[in-house]
Image (cartoon, rainbow, N blue to C red; front, side, top):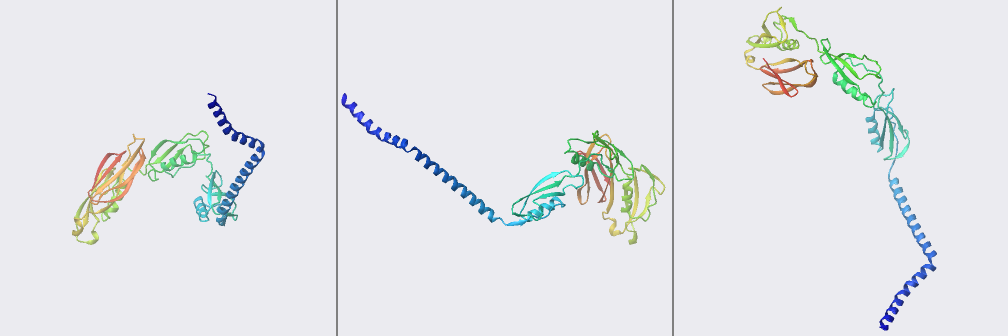
Amino acid sequence: MSRPRAGMKRVMVKTGRPLQLFRDYVASHSRLIVRNVFIILLLFIVVFVSVGLLVFWLMRRGQPEVAVPKVTEKDLVEGLIILQKKSLRAVIDPRYFSDKEKNTIVEQDPRPGSIVREGKEVKLIVSKGSIISIVEDYTGKTITFVRNRLQEIFSFQGKTIKIGNITSVASEEPPGTIVGQFPPPNTPITNVATIDLVVSKGTEIQAFYLEDYTDADISDVMQVLALRGVLVHVIPEEVVDPSQNGLIISQEPTEGTIVKRNETVTFYVGYLPSEKEKDKLYARVLNFDVPEDLETAQVRILVQDKIGEREIYNEENMGGDSLSIPFKSYSDTRAYIYIDGSVHEVRKLE
């Protein structure tokens, strides 16, 4: 039993001796090893940094130099185009200026004439316009304009001003034009939450004395009467004189008769035999009053005649608005008036 133990002891001695020798070597040469490792790391760092600097230098060396152009006092879009042509990149810094128009470039960095590499960033300070502190004058504008303007100028001030009550009145101004407002212009906006508007319905004629339209061109008369809300019925009459083609021969009712809105006037119109059976293209105006019980309404109007169906109007309106839409069509025209996507009225136009 003693022999195997002695053999194992000899094996352990043989394998343990190299390990002991390695430990002894490390212990006696530790300073040298640490120094060599440090030198290797230092050389690696130097080589890495040198290669990085070389690559950066080569890349910068390949970019040609350019002179920075002057873009101050120019419109932003124009300035961006100028910088792009010089291969320069713009960084925009928007600010408010009381004496500079919106989108005007106020300052730039680097300054004009500076020599830089292509691809250099140019900082642009751009005007966002002046901060509005008073109520503007909206007379002569439209409701859509005011709505967009309020959203534009007050969205950045942490304040919300909305359109309040809208009143429609008859006036000499075109329909949809603002003729009054409250608060009035130049009122400080500090305590203003809504702006009430007075909007023109146009010249509202309920009744008038009919003129004598004999010898007048039927297209011209149809447009005049349509603007007053009168429907026109045309009956062709054969004539031989070319100068009478398309002119009114007689009318019903006669001159001096009181005609009200939406009533019909009949005209007998002369046409040459070759023209009598042809459909005529007339200048017309379609009048429509948006129901007053609606706060807002999307009004869409289509007309249909021998050449097909086409849209002549599609806008959002306020309740009570009076619309007058000019258009041209042939005889036997139908007008389809939609409110919020549903058919509200169908008119037959002779």
